[in-house]
Image (cartoon, rainbow, N blue to C red; front, side):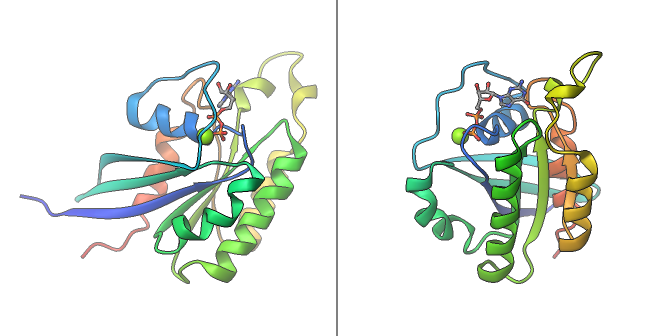
Length: 176
Ligand code: GDP
Ligand code: MG
């Protein structure tokens, strides 16, 4: 049978950008309108077949509140992958995402594969909703290009691009 590659993945980003909702969509194909905030961190796993590889994502979903920020290194220290999430309607969350990318490049494993994820794009789609967008897609693309990140805009609510983020990260994991 096929070998299974375990991949440690950490989610980082400001509180309420939708980190836990992205994980819930990926692991259970579900969404909750009023998701309770994560305390500390949550751990979940999900298997995923990518090409000829089976990857078992070991997912650490961290709390975004400042009072938990000092714990983040515990979760990203040995991570092979990171999702840095912001909310496309919240410019402060994009600034926070920049800081997380910088911290990961300085402190995490030098080979870490990082995805920059602009979530809640359902809120900016459709006629009359464009004024809700506060972070241009081009800003995300530019940061991703500068810092060598995988980039997606997602919606945990609709499911748009959620699986795609994990597959893009998983397909960058060298097979052994
Ligand atoms: P976290 O603190 O980053 O883990 O964020 P949560 O996953 O707890 O989500 C915070 C709030 O945003 C909850 O009320 C979610 O239902 C909502 N939310 C999360 N993702 C989306 C999304 O893609 N679109 C919309 N419209 N709301 C979302
Ligand atoms: Mg959470």
